Image (cartoon, rainbow, N blue to C red; front, side, top):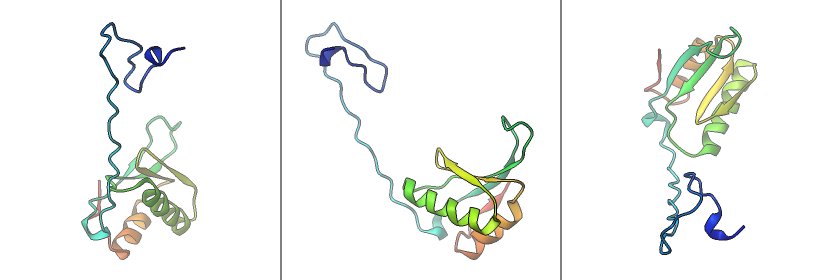
Length: 114
């Protein structure tokens, strides 16, 4: 397959314009905000989880490694499993109070429970 016919991440396969070039979007690496500037939201979710409750921590601004590190610390503190997907921390079970207390104790002062 020639380079002209390779799809890009926007779904374009080819162009009839001979001067057309795919423009690569620069990857913006967002710096991680300090804990006191993070406005995290802690909520309970059961959608698409077979009725099982999970605690979601959303609105983290920063690098993927940093949100994964925070997720690992929260899972350790709660003593449960979980994961990090799409910059959202997922903790198994209804752990809202524990998560909120840990975040506030560790400098995430603008954290709220919804």
